[in-house]
Image (cartoon, rainbow, N blue to C red):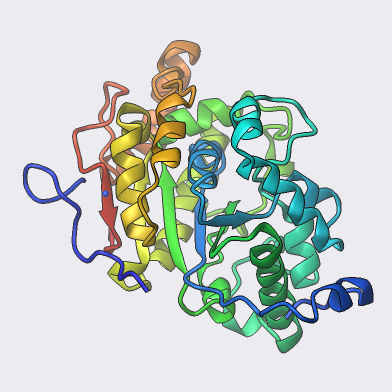
Length: 345
């Protein structure tokens, strides 16, 4: 087992500022195959609109990773759909499919239908979860599904992405050796992006994060119930909740990744993430990262939001923007690319 690096990973100052309750046919089919070990599964988390999808679409195609796919989301009770992802291991086919947007192509997915199947819908509960929410059935089913995907995709490691609540306490009760990557981004960029998606309606009917603090409610009401301010409140609330759980992790189990640093130096950033995860070096993986179409959307908010919206977000998020190192100019202050887990209190 390759050890995870300790401390901060290299810059000028020494830091990159980086089972299954199977159906009968499936159980019978795999009865003679070895049971794969679950070795340090990697969980990628963050607020919505923080760049987690970009990072997932890069990291998932390391040749060691298995993952839940768009087909898993559609057919969560049928583990055999995991095999469809092996199309990406075919030498000629994978280059053709690499960055195609065709809907039929198996691709890594934030598969909540699968997560709900594994956890009897506990994973998507609108509350914080800890180890007490994990029972024997959930542990057996979730671990069994991950083992099935490792076996059927022919991989040695597992990667999952989810957004919103971090679920770190809950996941560690199921996967004690898990590694966590927290992807984060300027809260103004997150708020602006969230304000433009069709799945978020911009009012309190889309508040899913427990009781809103009195200060946040006052900010929202003072803004005239401005949707982009509510989106900013979602960001800072989730950042606080995520930080609460991240602070409990040993330093070598958590890596923080900034969106702006990923888009500025994708190959360097992905190599540092590879080292944190304990993955082997892969020329194929590096080549895919070099070819990936990456667009820096980090300062778009400063162009699409009105001056009044920008000022309201600044007043609402100022303390959190400073805490996470984001400058007033709209371009994040210089900081390490990636940082091993430490408290940000």
